[in-house]
Image (cartoon, rainbow, N blue to C red):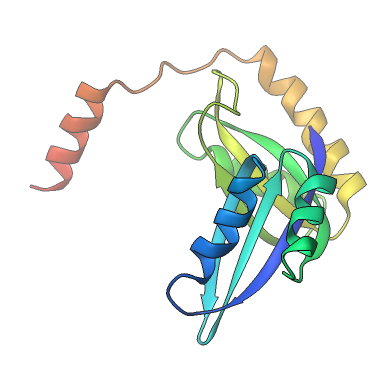
Length: 161
């Protein structure tokens, strides 16, 4: 369990604004660990966890892009049905509120993990402790076999019937 700095940028909800901001980051080779884009009518909010927070903030500032910073929790999500639900249940059981969450999937995550959840909670230190304890317990449990493409295709075919 680890924490990270997240950047949030509010953009006018018009074609090209998101691409322009991402181009500025890309030109300076700012790597992203996770990213989420949400809209609210005429504005959109881009939340992302950069590989190098200070450098990403510097790039945004040099391009006159305003941002807000927040501490977030990075939690491995088990590669099983209900994996993220279990993370949420552990936090709820300890009266921790999730302000928002989003996930990243790909090379950044370990092979045993289904993904990486970025979670903003009301008590970061307590959440880190709670999920750190559950991660230790999860390591002792045998993992389910991953779903193969063939099994997934059969499952989707059955759902369509």
